[in-house]
Length: 68
Image (cartoon, rainbow, N blue to C red; front, side, top):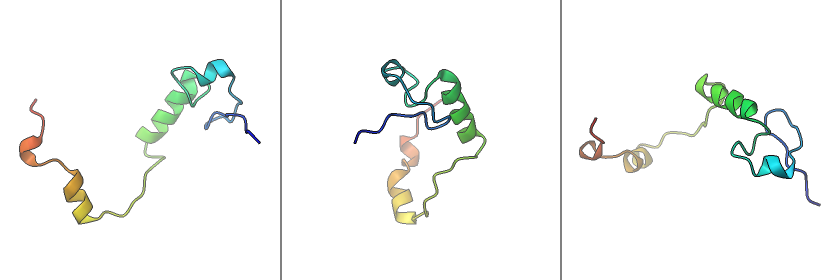
């Protein structure tokens, strides 16, 4: 069974035109902006334990940092 695609914020079912829009997976630019502001406000977070070995692997070396 194929489930309809819904906006993760307001749960509105998306039309095919909305699914092809630049604001997908949201139903509108407004829902996209509300979601972004929730990230900025810290209401969402990706929680993962910090592992020093992995952190050292993913962080750039100090001589690789971009210059302003």
